[in-house]
Amino acid sequence: MFYSHLLLAVYILTFLMGVPANMLSFVTFCRKVRRKAAPIDVLLLNLTISDLIFLAFLPFKMKEAYDHMNWLMPYALCPLTGFLFYVTIYNST
Image 1 (cartoon, rainbow, N blue to C red):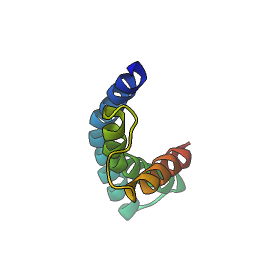
Image 2 (image 1 turned 90 degrees about the vertical axis):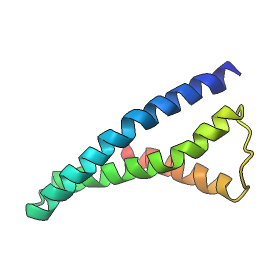
Image 3 (image 1 turned 60 degrees about the horizontal axis):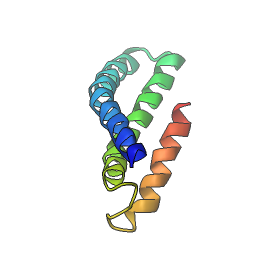
Image 4 (image 1 turned 180 degrees about the vertical axis):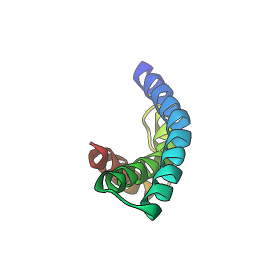
């Protein structure tokens, strides 16, 4: 029970800090890539996109943590959410 509350708090903090920071990064790198793209700019843009996909599916994991790690949403979302959640984490590392 404590684990799910701690995980929910971490997810909420990650979401609230990650969305504005990654949106700012996305806009910045899009502008820079249009002018003159260095390889590092393309890499950082791709990492930002990966983080935004992660943040788009994080509310589903937040709901799961809120329900004490029980999946109460439609079953079809469970494997999709899990897959995209972990793929974007591994993509960013």
